[in-house]
Image 1 (cartoon, rainbow, N blue to C red):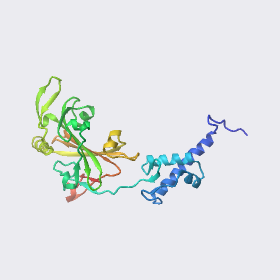
Image 2: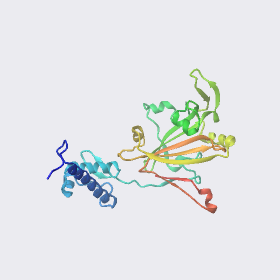
Image 3: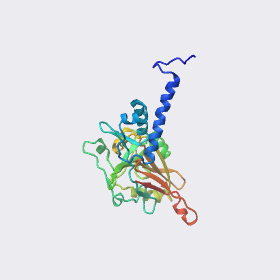
Image 4: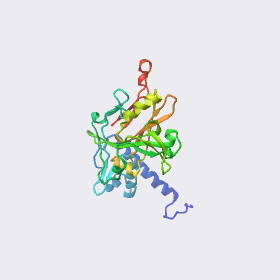
Length: 295
């Protein structure tokens, strides 16, 4: 009988396929146990040797299955301590649409909802960028696309990090508004940039009041997506375990004729937040499309 020629590691294709399917089978078994509550949040899994004995396989195969479950956000590995079931944080409703005001509304009062502003350290480069204050800058390609303007046009940018005091969850909030809609443009500067004359202490509600008066009635459209965080986002948002995406909620302000005027982004760990929308019929139509964010 002729056997398939072994590959470089001495294994036949069938043997390699068997090993691949074996670690996937073990991954499925462990995932099922985790999702069905066989292991409780925070509980340590048996060691690699014990699991290898239990599943009659090798430690590298167990290690590969565990790595897959870590990437799925079901397990955490603490080097020197073991592998633990990842806790699932309790979530609370904190963003409920316009009544009461939600996190993306101009009249939302974060401190009244137990949010605190996170101040950067004195040596943090963020402190040199007018943290939590309006910052005149020029639109890059991403901002220009979101606002429907050409790259290089003046915008006003704000950003801040907020911490929910009861849960310690951290979010990033940023916004960009077309500068000449809310500031006085004095024309090209020596750098050939158009920087508007703005008061750095102006509050967002002043912008919204002005835009409502000049371009209203205003409308908003909200979009949500998730992706894996960049390194700086994982650090600033306290996203420690791997496999946790960042949730990005964008609300864009539209003029009466549908032109974008401003947008606000919330970035948050997806394991601490969830987004819900309301729909209604009849007398409930005023609630349709409002956004709920849970922490």
